[in-house]
Length: 213
Image 1 (cartoon, rainbow, N blue to C red):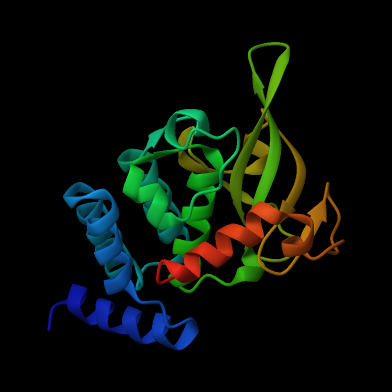
Image 2 (image 1 turned 90 degrees about the vertical axis):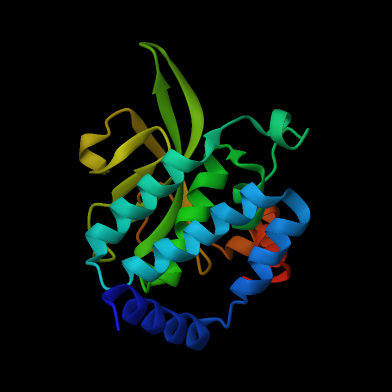
């Protein structure tokens, strides 16, 4: 058996025991809703996870960040969804082949969880990103924490390399969240239930389950 097939088998055992996702359903829906190109992207995503399971966590971060940054176009929600602010599921994101910073961050978060990186090590982080010498824009990135109090490493659709937060002085964190908590600024304790405070987060989690995830 090849290393790829072996790792793919391990991956299926892991994700089935974790959340019982239905990847065949996800790929079928990609074909049905968005066409052959979307189904090909989902197939490549599944292959990425099969190949990445045996890698170190740092290698997983790099591969997942690069996969989405190179395959998916950055585009505003008004163009993709005709809405001011829409959080897409990974299926919707890969299906359209385009999305904004929230969509990149959510897809990377879900993928890394499926690769065995615990929820306690991942947070979606809202930041103010410097754009030019004086202005800043609202932006979202994904943070990876090797330990709860460690400096996060940042996965960003604007930069292909994964960098420690200290090397991203252009980003100022506002708040962060994952499935289990919501943290304001540099707080070490969660201050709220994210699905209560963030309706778009609750909605995207519900739609993911309908997509087979």
